[in-house]
Amino acid sequence: MMPPNDHFQNQIQATPWPSQSGFIFFLLWFLSAIAVTIHFDVFGMFSSWLWHGGGGYLDELISILLLWGVPFMIHLIWHLHQRFRTLQRDAENISQLHHRNESILHAVGDGLFGLNGKGQITFVNAAAARMLGTASGQRMEIEPRTLRGAHSDLPADPLSSAMEHTLADGQIRLCAQESFYRTDGTTFPVEYSVTPLDPNQPSAGAVVTFRDITQRLHTEEELNRLAAAVNQTAEMVVIIDPQGNILYVNTAFETMTGHGRHEVIGLCILNLPDGGLGKQWHHQISMALSQGIAFRHCYPAVKKNGSIFHADITWSPVRNRDGAITSHVVVGRDVTFELELERQLRKSKRLEAIGTLAGGVAHDFNNILTAILSYTDLTMDDLDPSSLEYSNLGEVMEAANRAKELVKQLLTFSRRNEQERISLFLSQEIKGTISLLKAALPDKITLEASFSDKEDQVMADPTRIHQMVMNLCTNAAEAMERNGGVIRVHLERILVDQALIERHAALAKLQPGPHMVLSVKDQGVGIAPGSLDRLFEPFFTTKSIGKGSGLGLSVVHGIVQTHEGAIKVDSIEDQGAIFQVFLPVVRNPETTSTV
Image (cartoon, rainbow, N blue to C red; front, side):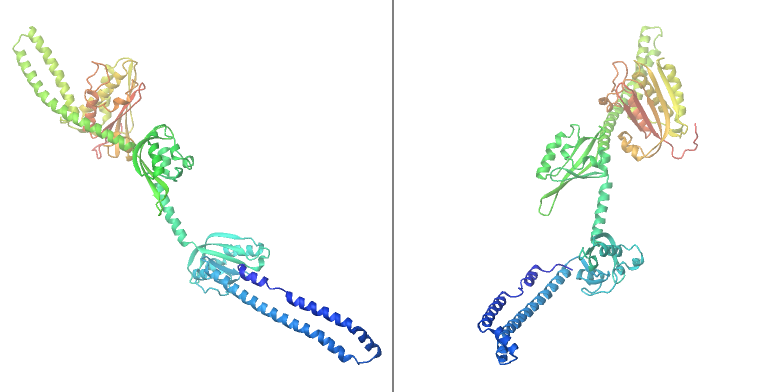
């Protein structure tokens, strides 16, 4: 089963044969016998005795032979006695060696059982007995096929096949994740190997070594569950070694950055492409790697396609029991949408504050205008219509009426005026507004309208819808005043889902569900990025002096807000802009139709 102990082997091999002292004694005795034979002419006397037929010297000859033979016999008996004692010591050493090897086999944590040339189990160590539920050290005249239980009748039994091949060719066989049956019929997973006792004589037998891998499989299952959870989490997870080299990235990292794991595994985290945006954090990362400092920060990063996203990064060192850093874990979250939502919230709060102020001013201004209009009208009743005073007061009345219209727009923006909303089809209101606009637009500007086949009703104020479409198209026409072009108005029904809301912060207040979307697209000068945040503020305009009051888009924003909708703007300078108004459809309209 195992090689003999070297100490006992040396004791066995150290016994001399024959002994050196016995050989010297025998040599001295032999030389003295030759000297006596020559001195007394023993051969001559023996020849004379045989020639003459006499026996006078027979007693002397026997005495001489006995004299020669007795020492030899004594030496032979002594040597045989020494040899016997040596054999006894060798037997004791062999017995000790056997018990020592058997103790070693029983002390091994893996299960062992020995096979004879016929493939029968001849020895089972303590670990194997414990796992198989049988007595250890016994000779079991059974076939190992029974360890496979009910599956032992299958001709392709892996254990029997491995043993048969090893006993035939003397090669080691390794098998993994098989199942052995205990004597009570239960099973347990194992991995095992079949090793020949003598590769040159495979039929001499073999040793099967196996171990119970139940706990390992449970641990691997837990690790697989943990790895699957980490890999499926929405936050990116990066594991880094103490030198800063990337060891692992999850799927969210690939989705968030656009870089495949094969592109970054083994790469130093300081060498990740960042377009120069992350260089301000290189010193902080270097300090974290060298001193094990944990930190959290939000910084802009570059995707593989060149686009920018903002990542909220948490860096944590991983230490062993001795406190030494074994790795670092980086957890990141894409907060681009949250930052945009925060920006939209600040913008909404700013517009709300401006609207509150504008509403208060408009209310008081409306009271002043009422007095101006009333007294002007009373004064004009007392004057001659042909007089200069009457004409001057007419100009005052006209200016006051323009101011009154301005107050109405301010009240619309501030949402202080009451609006009556009914269930209607937007296409009907839009078509009526467009017919009026076409007659008023310059010849170099074309207005095109298209409507989807499916349309649902919305709850809206027809007058406000007319005002909204008018303002959007007028704003588009003013942006195309220099070069002209085409204004495209399109109405369609879409299903707004949570994913769409999360992609566009401007739609954050919408509820998932069907919406009607009005799009107004122009080919004008576009809007500068710095102006997008202030686009819906009252009195803010990018037009030259005298070209606009800055209330058109503010009124549109107020109308959209009062209709529980949302407005989204996309623009590229010198390439035009597109305004999209989302209005929720009526959930249970009395009538719906396809137009």
